[in-house]
Image (cartoon, rainbow, N blue to C red; front, side, top):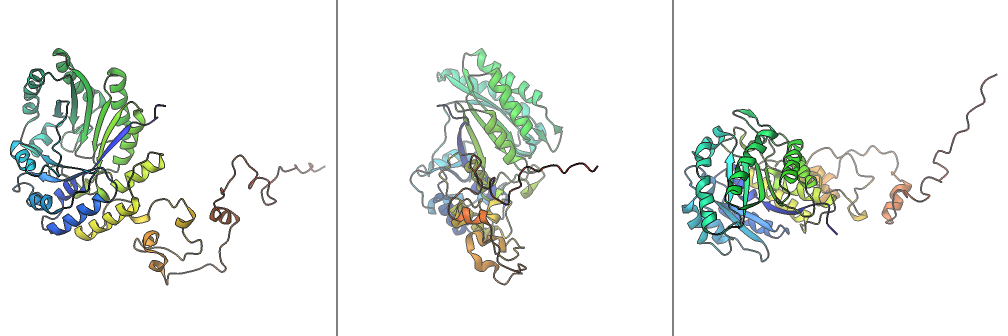
Length: 401
């Protein structure tokens, strides 16, 4: 039976996308400790950092030490970002444990915002498009059968404004036509959002149009930032726009940290918090293999490193308590602070001494049922619909004569 959802390939980017905007003086040993802890959460793909110039990204200046010191866990794929041949050669020195990603699909890419391209990579949009011919020529020479298309800054720009879905589809159509001209099948599409302009309606529209126009495309990627709180809902839109025959690549960071110094929003840019995203998937019935308790511990470790609260939510309130042993105490006192809210993981002593206004212990027949593992409501049964306390049909009073 075909699943209603696509296969989701999730990559944790906290050590790269997150740390690239944080203090460059965070100790290497602290980063190694966090990376090792992340390795134990059940996450399958983790980016460890970037092999880039320390002149522009001093936070990655000691990436070699991190890769040399951490303890790889079997079954986890570790990757690193390398933007040029020099960076790639550095990364290769650490393979294994690093996996050097080489897609079987060459891809045409372009920033829809020329200003951001110039700020981010010192290249113009025009230079990016000029490089397409070389990508195509290499693909033809190597006998490649499948290729990809994609845009970055897909949804809009802090520097030049909004980009319509029509505009994005035009870029994708032009790229698709170039692959068509050399007889190479397009099977993947990617969209990117460095400045936090993503919106679920646009994601749904883009992926929906792509599937209708090019049904042979079955691999999708969405790199979404959270400047305006739309990353997770946009990821949800991507998931629901696709189906079980598709593969969807998504990325996020623990605590939702991250950002680009070139986009104008700094650390406020953020990404979808990994712990919140995994919690959403579990609620959708999509198995993640991730231990949320361990993941939350990683977020708390991160917050100590960066000296502030991260952007996520599940790390503050815990996952939804679904079983009796996880239920909150019905007679818990007032819980007012974020620190007290951590009782879900730290225990009742975290709120000892708080105000308790209840004049008598709180009881409930629904709670009694839940604690026994019975359903709180029997949708197709008799509880509580036939109990004496449940309202019965009323008989209208006789009209006054």
